[in-house]
Length: 178
Image (cartoon, rainbow, N blue to C red):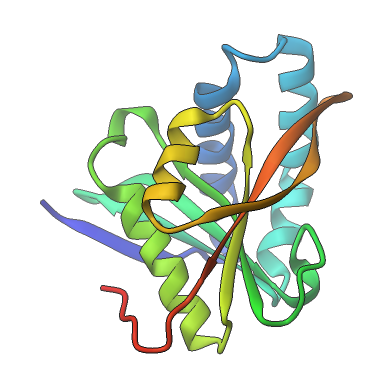
C-alpha cells in the first residue's frame, strides 16, 4: 500500500477544485437540497476562491495520494486565516475530504496526524475543527482521535443555516505523529 502526502501548490488549483467539488457533493448531497448544495459549491470552490485560499500564507493544503492517485486532502489554517478566531495557540483543520472510493483505508487518520504534526512544528498547543452536527461518522472518528466538543458555530449551506460542532484537541508536549 503506497500512501503519500504532498503539499498542494498554486499550480494545482484545478485538481484541488475538482476533488473539493467531488468529495463535498458525495458527502452532503443526500442531506441537503440541490439548490443549497449548488449555491455552496459555486461560492466555496470557484477558481478565484480556491486560488485565494491557496495563496494565503496562513493556510496550507496537502493532498493524500493512494497508489499515485489523489484520494483526498486536508486544509489547515493558522492565525487570521482561521474561520473562527480561536487564538494564536490554535491550528484549525478546516477540511479533511476523502473521496468515497478511498474511505475506510485510514487516509483520514493519516491526514489528521499530518495536521497535528504541522501544529506542533508551528508551535501550536491545540488543534480544532468544525464538524456538521449530523455527520455522525465524522464526529465518532474525531472523538476516537481525542477531540472534545467545546461549542458550536453556524455554517451556511446556501442560505440555510446549519450547526457545526466545534471540537478541540490539546496536543501533548511529548506526543509524536507518524
